[in-house]
Image (cartoon, rainbow, N blue to C red; front, side):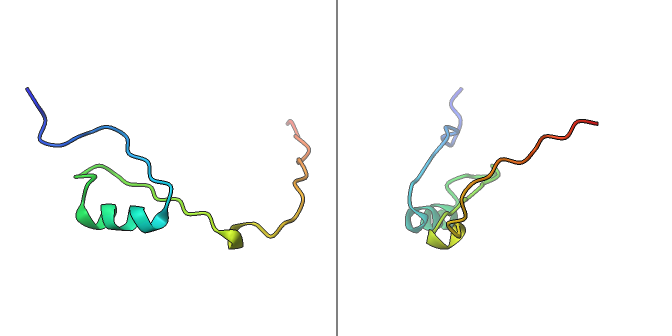
Length: 55
C-alpha cells in the first residue's frame, strides 16, 4: 500500500529554499524544524569549555 506523500527526511541548506517548502506544506502533518544560522549568530567569542560539576 503506497502512502500519498513522501515521508523521507528532507534537508535544504538555504533559508530562502526552506521558506517556500514550508509555505507549500511539503511536510504534510509532520512537525518541521527550521534552524537558520547567520553571521549574527556568533559574536566571535572564543569557545571555553565549562567545568563539569558532579553532585
